[in-house]
Length: 170
Image 1 (cartoon, rainbow, N blue to C red):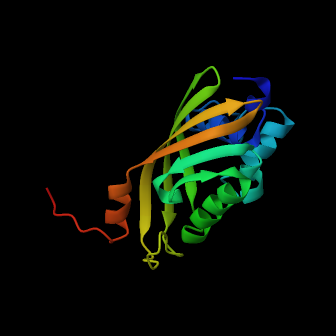
Image 2: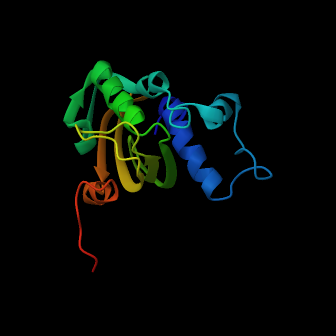
């Protein structure tokens, strides 16, 4: 991965979250990192639900493929809408980064979303229920920006957790 990708707020947030989770940090506080990366850890992007910071990591012609985004979205304005929709539906949305795998200009990130459905999503009314959703992000980078972001969720599990889909116990 190029140094421009590795210096982006999204990349730093993902990598630092992984490092923190795996104990590679100073005295239980912040991961070892330079100034820009430390700022990312303190609240940029996902932690602050900062749409502008997250959108800045995407190329002008970037694509997100996600069932929660309504399929495929193109460009900064649609990507901004994707993040705004998530953050309205789940105003306490959090992301716990698990494994991060890198291969050239591609990365796979295994993570878990947690949040409470206070805003409703995908046309459904809010339920007030807490959810925990495994997710995999598959990123492709070019010139230091994300050009493709494919997201794979446990969508059935999400619908069961918010009470939209009923499941019989095994």
